[in-house]
Image (cartoon, rainbow, N blue to C red):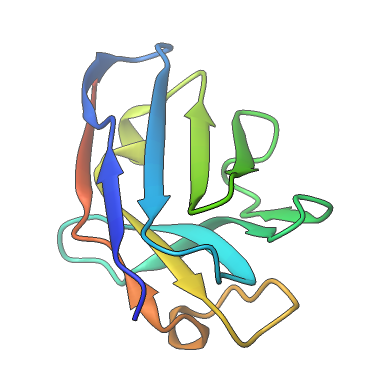
Length: 125
C-alpha cells in the first residue's frame, strides 16, 4: 500500500505561480501523475511522469505552463507540479496519483491505484 500526501495548493491571482508537492510513502511507484477536478466536471489528467523522470506527458491545456518532476531518495518518491501563468480555468482540486505496476504514463484515472486526498488550487481573475 502506498500513501500519497499532497501540499502546496492555495489562492493565487491570474498569471501567478504555485508549486504542488506529493510525497509517496514508499519507493515503489512506477508512474506518478497529477489530475484535477473542477466543480461539476469530471476528473481530468494534467501531467504524468515515469519513475526515472525520463518521460513526461502533459494535457494540451497546460503544456508550456506546467512542469512535472520527480525526486527519489532511499525511502520515498516525491513528485512536484510547478504551475506558472495560472488561469482561472485552472481552478480545481488537484490530486496526486501513482501506480506500481504500469511502466507507461496513462492519462486515464483508472490506471492509477493510489491517490492523495487532493489540494485546492484557486486562481482569481
